[in-house]
Image 1 (cartoon, rainbow, N blue to C red):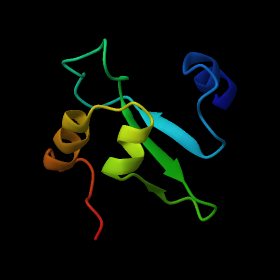
Image 2: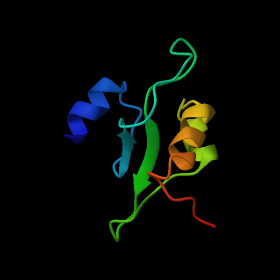
Image 3: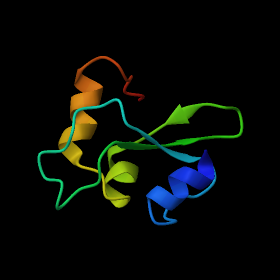
Image 4: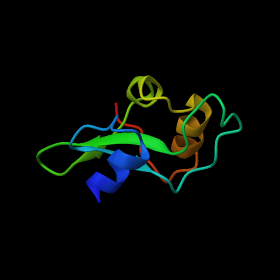
Length: 76
């Protein structure tokens, strides 16, 4: 699956990086990538930050919509 995602994203994903697609669509598809960018550490914990998501081309509004929906937890 990683090879498929890597091909889809133009080889911009590192091993351990993923895109969560079950989030609202961006209102600006010409400016931002769809989905929520996150990484999984060696212990299997998945996490994201606004900075991480935006650095990979993600829409900040999609990040906050996912956090505010309660589907994702905001870590301190």
